[in-house]
Image (cartoon, rainbow, N blue to C red):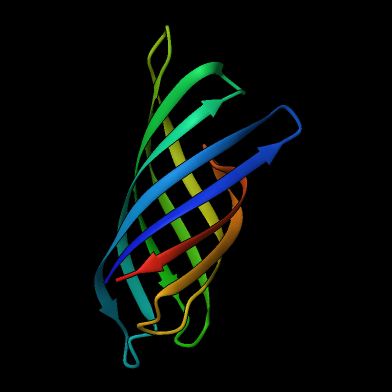
Amino acid sequence: MNLIHGSFGTLVLGYTANIFYDRLLSRIGKQNSTCTFVRIGYQDNIILTDPNGSAFILEGGILTGKNYGHFEGALGITYIQTQNNVIRPAFSVGFRGQKPNGTFMFRTGLGFPELLFLGVGIGF
């Protein structure tokens, strides 16, 4: 399954706008209740580091749960393109609402560089 989704994130000092592509890699467990995925993304307006910056994100993660509600966790790297290009860790933990093989997806959680985020997407 493939997924295109966007999110907005915020903390007191800034905000982010993100777009991602997720690809489901495998299903694990007796009831296929755990999945692995890879995520690539682009982010604009990283106020915490540079108001004119952008970032490219690469993460690998897991989803648990077999009905609508899923725990989502991911780890990876972020390449932040500013005057002083830097590489930082990327991570996210949160909730993903998506029916098995459903098209609509909702997610919320906390991470870097997404901050405290809220997002929606479409699976295909």
